[in-house]
Amino acid sequence: MPDPVASWPTGRLLSVAARLVEHSWQEFLATRGLTHAGLIALHLLLDGPRTQRALAHGAKVTDQTMSRTVERLHRAGFVERGTDPSDRRRMLVTLTDAGRVVHADALRAEREAPEVLGAVRDYEAFRLQLVELVTTLGIDRAVRPER
Image 1 (cartoon, rainbow, N blue to C red):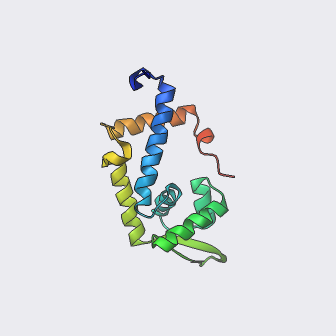
Image 2: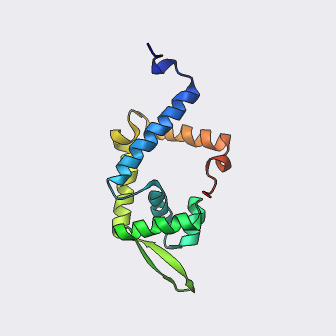
Image 3: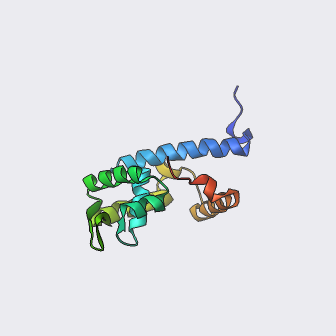
């Protein structure tokens, strides 16, 4: 008989929980035409238009990865692309109303939808603990740009 989950070491619990949440989150986002990278880009665009390069930097991904992400978001109607008036060689990405709606829906689901985080009873306390864990262990190790 396998060990019950309650007897697992904390590291194993964190690892398995992370994979399960990542899977459920990806499924949830996919039903809305989003990816995790796309949601990050939408989040970064809430403050206003950005260049693709600024988005890539903010999301800690390569320019090429962000280019593909912006293309998918554009096809879904979540962003608009245009020329940067201050430098016509650069592309400026702007959030659409549909992008704002899908972003808000994702944030709501993150806090409330049982299919996303499952059994988290106190979302805010859980989130604060995760922030503390990530910042204590080193955010730089957790979010290196993709190569």
